[in-house]
Image (tube, one colour):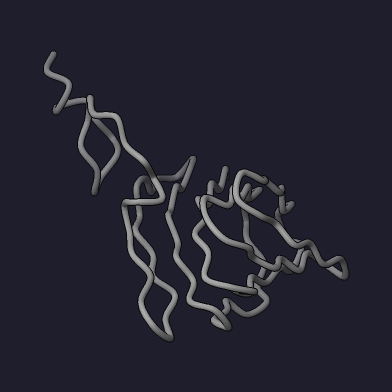
Length: 114
């Protein structure tokens, strides 16, 4: 079977080495997202945050794992606050309210497992 017929990831090429932090750019005053996978089991999304931009508090039906690809982001999970830098990862349990804030411009990969 051809790779392209079984490939479930969208918006990126198969069988190619990628630098995820280069897959989207910063845009002034915005949060930018690029969905890589979205199905009933898992969601993979890249995000870039301009400094001072945020995603307000919300809860998810799945366990979420974020990995910072560039810069520094502030993550509030329940009542705890975490500053994550490039290369650091945080798990945010399902149904626990969480928020994300750009301490500076930063990029992250969000993986949600349902």
